[in-house]
Length: 626
Image (cartoon, rainbow, N blue to C red):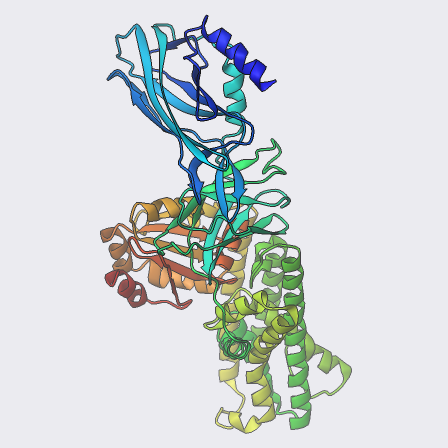
């Protein structure tokens, strides 16, 4: 059938100037085609080199793999006519013994755009092409041919297509597509590339990746695809020739099941090379979690709640044994809520969804509920009414114990929008480990959060230096009540952002500050490809640490000046609302909590991840030593 069709084209060529002469050489029929009978000045039209190898023979893609040579076209054109780059359909992988090549075993049209200058006075043009290729089976034979394709140039921009148009349309279906809704990143772990691709639909199919460079992967090694929800992870063996100089892994990813509803088989991949996710030992992760939990007690949402309990301890002087029981129930309340949060994170992980510490604040309902809790606590501190929920009373009955347990739950809830130093690495380790190990790390976090009050309850003598109850306690409660009211106002602002009542973009727009761009892996890749320094701020309106660092550090005059003087491309990855691209990027950078600050020096391959608590000096030192 193919031979008949080729003969038909050959006969048509004798009557139609848009078909150049067919050449048979090196076991391949080759022909230069155009899909138009006439072309117009100022327009771009398409021509193609059509290859039809004999049965069992093949020719090569732009990266031939372990062996081979890609076809080359050298054009001889008038000065007002320009030829663009070859548009390559996605190839097949061809295994020959221990080698794997990328190429085509069937008829394939390589498309080339041709542009005629708008001011051209030509009435006829001749497209003269020198074509070289290599055809292989068990041996390889080079082919060479020259083609002349005369075309008429018309003034009218309306052009007529000829019988070859359906060949061009079919060839376009095989061209890899750019899909903005599909994101990718890659990192190296040992001798493997981990290519992470996130698609908008359910992940199905075995992905095959064709790199543009021939020195990044071992082509003959198997490629392994892992899928979870809408995420693909493709494991590729790193080439022994790789020199570690790659900033972006470029290529084509083919999915036989299709990438979208239109059934697109091949997409263009431009995956930034990022740092391997952080790995720490279980004991270190537990220690970091314990320290992070301790520091959480100093956060503005948690400190007033803890202080309420301590003030009751000072005010009522309960029996040491009763106080210790209440403190243990308070700790149990913290642990129960931390375990519940950990369980939810592990369920999401098993379902292929990436989530991190504080993700529940991306829900407006949760935000307004926490705001209500803090408002009630503030009224209690102002003396509007008294209740024992967060207190240790002198009672040992069920009501008092229940109150301590509930206060532990409240402490965890109000602590979750904050991330303390050491917590980021610990929680990332917890999510990446088997669930049982992860529960152990989360348990240490809960113990750290509960430990200060347990110690004060077990050793009340530590409070002996505190003055006896008096007016100072009332004033201190009112001070903490003001802090809680400020937190309530902040949460209402977060609620307005998440529900669209306020403009989310106003979070990082000011003419007197760093000029932030919205984060996207592609934009970051482009900036790095241009040799620019890049700074990424992973933030959210509900993250207290993020807002403090933004006001005190990222808006400081010295930092703003340094960004402008060094032409740093600044990207704001706003996680106020759930964004799978940002969530995946956090995981790739080895984090699942915010804030996270990532800095790429100019032309640097490896990012620098800054501490979660930063100062202007921290950032300026990184910039000055780039």
